[in-house]
Length: 422
Image 1 (tube, one colour):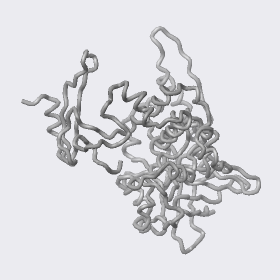
Image 2 (cartoon, helix red, strand yellow):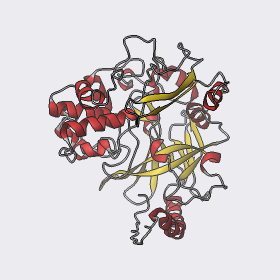
Image 3 (cartoon, one colour):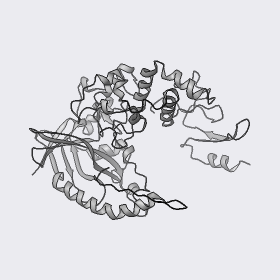
Image 4 (cartoon, rainbow, N blue to C red):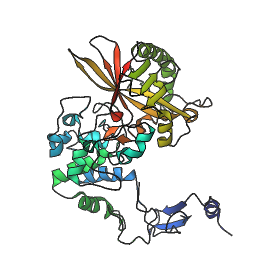
């Protein structure tokens, strides 16, 4: 008779590969107590103690551990441009379109505070001919990325590509999820030590932990492989809570109470300002290009919702729904501010925002009674989930004249500027 855990695994639908293991490290000789699983969609059918997995986010921790074990934290406040020559030579004149690499520290990279793109390898431009039929513009050869998921590139190609990416936020100001950051951190570590990252990872982490079957590369034999090769402060207001008691104080709970009082007033003020500045319909000035964007700021939820988006005659809501795997009925596209912007006396100001695709039912359920500090916020994780021709599909840039009125909005990835209707 199967044990409960084994039975639970066996009951999973055949279309959902699942494996599980339970190990004890408290024994003199660590032992695996339970292993079971099946992978019916993959080439190898059984998950056991010899199975090798391709890991994802935990590799970020390995990168940071390797750095700290090799060098400690004495370089943490150094600018990454001090240790990566490709970034030292990068232009930083325009804060809206160029990452200020001389202001990004190694600690920023390690702590998800660099304000840079999520990825470079997942650019949608490889499908530009197909995507042109659903609202995307055609790209010329100079706009095509040199690295893709199926065509990885070397160090030169990697940096040649990321130097064209726009910043998401200014460095050291807010967390933004980035896979790129840890690749750059590894290159900086190699530059400082004059060693390969692979050798340092092996010497400092894998060998001491007796992870003899783990590596940066795919195993020489795929017999045991489980995963096949393939695709892999907003309001300018703050408060401080200080507490002392025998049993301690739950600061998040106290912050919820204060936030529940402050936040509605702050949101109402911000919403009124957003309505005056950004709300409206933006349309292409070229009558031959059927592209428009309508933004409102009065539905009582965070960010500004996009209520209509037409790109090259295509309902772009449907395109984004397909790309994000959501039903168009559940999809909410909301525009959130960043702190990236530039002001000139002659041309006015440019302010960058990001569009986050959200599920209406998942994020705004009326049954949730959690507070603003005890509710998980996933918007930081959803920034720049896709690029097109090296530019984030989620970026929009509002252009103000020399006064305070917004005159137009750019969608850099779609290579278009739309004029605000008065």
